[in-house]
Image (cartoon, rainbow, N blue to C red; front, side, top):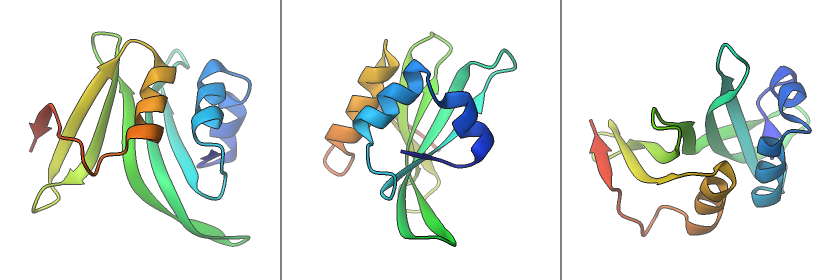
Length: 120
């Protein structure tokens, strides 16, 4: 797992969040994450991206999934840019533990799964 910028990587390295991401997305040339933090510096939202055209000069980041903290405290797994007009967010599951949400995204994929909720 590669992070979008140095500051994100610096804040994440050595945390349980980083440990889970590196375990389930071990290839730095295949997966990337953009991480958003709460004002209290807790992880709040991660966009998981597939990487392509990786070189010394950069890479192409394509949205794959989001893992975000829901109001309930659980971790929501969703994807954006779905539907005919690519204007829908599909919510697939809620998990009590971040590591389990990472496992869901890494192992199950989304091509054959049906969303529980669709937001337009």
